[in-house]
Length: 191
Image (cartoon, rainbow, N blue to C red; front, side):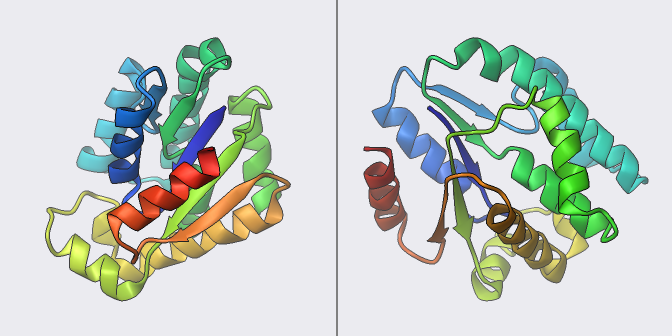
């Protein structure tokens, strides 16, 4: 099974991935961007150095996605793969930066990078303005978080719109619930 956790920063994706790692010890745990050596460099460039062109940012994410697919996803399709982010995030951020980009255009680019392979399940952790503000105030912001809360909430809405547009299995969970309750729901989905 190929499972992707989606959501904007501070929604709790990484926490849930860490909890699943303790249960599914043989699972391939990965992330985008940064799930490969090249991806780590791309992630560093985007999040810390800042990229001036949103088109450049889109292509860097696509380059990371193509490398990640070839190195991590394709050779492990017979195993449980759990990814902290994936192509939905890439499309949602691209739409936030370029409102003229349509879902089908971005989907075509991403399917090209992914050799037409989509995950078996996507779990989106949905947050709200209050929770987002509370969690962002507790950490140092990267270049994307510095774009603001309204920007991030717009990205989240893009994620929901993309999921509704695709013919793919997904579940949206409320990030305001306790970590334990979210984990319980996820385990239920996986079993």
